[in-house]
Amino acid sequence: MAVTCHFISDEWKLQGYVLETKELSVKHTGADVAQRLSEVADAYCIPNYKRVAVVHDNASNMKLCDEVLKQDPENWGKVQGVYCSGHTLQLCINSSLKVNATLQHTVAAARNLVSHFRKSAKATAALKAKRVKDIRDHELIPDVATCWHSTLMMLDRLVEQRWPISAVLRDLAVSKKDDCSLDLTEEQWTSLDLTEEQWTLAKDAADVLHPLLTLTELLSQEINVSLSATVPMLSNLKKCYLSPNEGDSPAIRELKKTLVTEIDTRWELNELEPTSIYLLSVALDPRFKHLKFLDAELKENVHTQVILLADHLHQRDTTEEDHASEEEAEEDAPAAAAGPPAKKKKRREIEMLLQSSEDEDEAKEEGDGDAKKEMEHYLQDKSKAKSGPLVWWKANRFRYPKLARAAKQCLCIPATSMPSERIFTTAGYIVNKRRSSLLPDNVNKLVCLAHNMKSVGLYGVSN
Image (cartoon, helix red, strand yellow):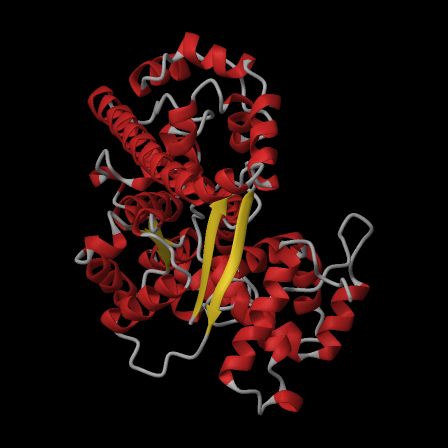
């Protein structure tokens, strides 16, 4: 089990670190996973208010893990579960491709056709020879059951290479006579060449799936804010790309309809509460702050919840700062009696004197220290976040100090569990057949060093 943590630094940059990579010796039940997560968080002294969300796949044990953690508010506060967007899209598309029999037969026929060329060196050589200048020299791509985009790539490549493929199948010097049947029926879909209807359906299905591939790639990037873009992009996807058109075939119409239903069901888009971390993060992203995809009542409730969150975080931070100041005063009292203040205190005083007061004055004028007024000015702010929400917040953090604190808490959450899953790739390089006797603790240390040193910019630096 690999556990990673994610946060936004003082410089408003996304940071991610590996906390642990260890074998889970007990059963992988939701209760056992929740207990292990608690042990990891406690080991790193992560306070409950910083345990905002747990990102995971859609497995039933992980859903149960969310419920177990919510039953422990003392240690986990108001933690929310976030489903991995990549895994959720995988489930949506897999279900959609199986609903229509014609589409399912087309995909199976395409898979069979690719398999034929990959197994026959003679057919592959003939395919390369029959390509004309306008057709690129690309190999056919097989699909993988666990990667839905491989099905898209397979269909795309087949459509691109359609005419050389058909020419090879018609060449009796290369292919058998039965391989080039052009009058297939649904009962004969296992024959190699596709019918005109299947070629058209393959192209149309690929066109429908392309936007979903773009969405997957954007939400899987660790360097960009992703959770706040999930719901707006899904809403735009349904409106612009999954709406039925007049020229759609029955199979494509059914594909689009099923995709919309699956997306709504698996993300529970019609049941999102104003306190959902999805909607809170959207409201704190300057690109989507107006929540145009929501109705007026829900939009107002979400903005209210953001204000409450901002006030709560500000109050807690103020309490912690007062407590820390009292502790510092107690520590500095003996030193003040003995002599001059410590260098650390001097440095802190110098930094405070050097801070620019212009931004703070502007914050007082615009927000007057009230989260509700900050929200009003924030919604009226017409400045664009062209370089991303984090760059925008870094430039406006003094204008909206309370909202900025809430943005730090919500925008750091990734929309995918890919950062954790990529750790297993790193572990695969470390644990190999020549190092198969590594102890689990040593594997954990090596994986953490390999990833975390790279994250802090120390990768490759020697003593």
